[in-house]
Structures are given as structure tokens and as C-alpha cells.
Length: 96
Image 1 (cartoon, rainbow, N blue to C red):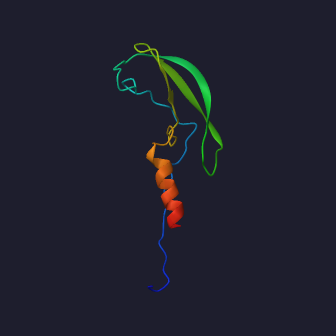
Image 2: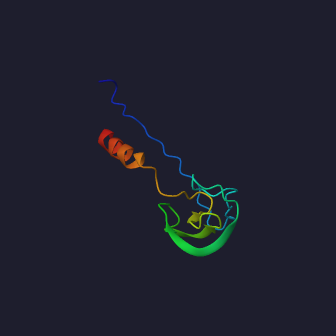
């Protein structure tokens, strides 16, 4: 089959910037709420998979409308992966 060339996969990871200013959303992230006013709730530690950091600090805020809390992460850090991520991760490992 071919000249022995395998498939190449290049991953581009976002740069984690724990010292960068964290920006609050303009609207509550919960779909059933359109709240625009938030109260600082607490600082939490967020484990990350990064080449330089094992964890970063994130802030949790409470929406004053729905009373639920949500995290605000530093630049380059996202929340939990979508549901389909594990499924695609398994497929990628199989193809490897």
C-alpha cells in the first residue's frame, strides 16, 4: 500500500495564560437565563492538561437572576469537553 507514508496528525493547543485577565460573559451562560448581573462567588483550582501548567486558578460567579454559579477560566482554558469528545478520542486511538 503506497510508499509507507502514514497519516500525520498535528494538534494545535491553545496557549494557557493563567495571569491573563479573565473576562466575565455579558449574559449568564445558562440557556434558560438571560441574567446580566453577577456576584463573585469563589476562587477554584482547575486541573489542566498543558505542557507548562498542571492547574490554574479560575473564578466562580453567581448569576443574580437564576442563582446558579459558573466558572470563568483564564485565556486558553476551557470547560469540560463536549459529550462527543470521548467518542472521537476512542476513534482516533483506534486509527492510530
